[in-house]
Structures are given as C-alpha cells and as structure tokens.
Length: 136
Image (cartoon, rainbow, N blue to C red):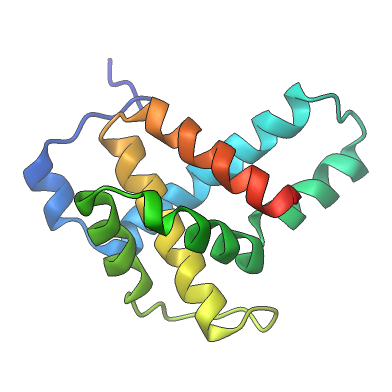
C-alpha cells in the first residue's frame, strides 16, 4: 500500500519538481501545521479556529514569516525559497500585494520541499519561529 501521508522522493525528483508544485504541497503542509497548532492549544469553536487559521495562513503573515526565517536558512533551503519567490503563478488574490504573494509562495515552496524531504524537525523549528514572528 502507498503511504500518501509520508511520500518519499529522491533528490533528483525534487530538483525536477517546479516551484509551484512544491508550493502546492507546502500550502497544505503549512495549513495543516497551523490547524494542529490552533486545535492543540485550546481553540475549540469553529468560528475562532477559522478566524485564526485565516490570520496565520494569509499571504501577508506568510510573507512576514518567510522574511523572518530567511537569515536562518541553509544554502539549499535558501535556494528553494528564492526559487519559489521567483515563480510566476497564474492567479493572484486581490487581498495580497505582489511582494507578499511572492514571499508567501516562496514559504510554501520551502515547506513543500522540506516535507517531501521528510525534514519534519526542521519544519517544526521554522514554524515555531514564524509563529513567534506573527504572534508578536
């Protein structure tokens, strides 16, 4: 049976993957981590959970998080993040600036890459830093 929760990809396959494909995966990973953080920290009403999730996963918050972790990244992580920042998505939400959306896409690409590399400890480390940044 295939394990879709813990996919395994070699470095060559990850290198061939587009930044937008990494961001597609990373979007899910980042939101799942956000939802886990909120539900495990006592938020119980659907309204509160949704409101806080949207606040943390919005492009502006993700962009702030990407800028906060940039100096802490390894060379490989920085390369993935910058490649993701330069990706050209076909759709841009009206609620985000071009710069914020670019950095949000970059952060999602990095999270997708780290997830597919099974670097879960690093994901948690970076997510903690991001939470501290956006929670103030």
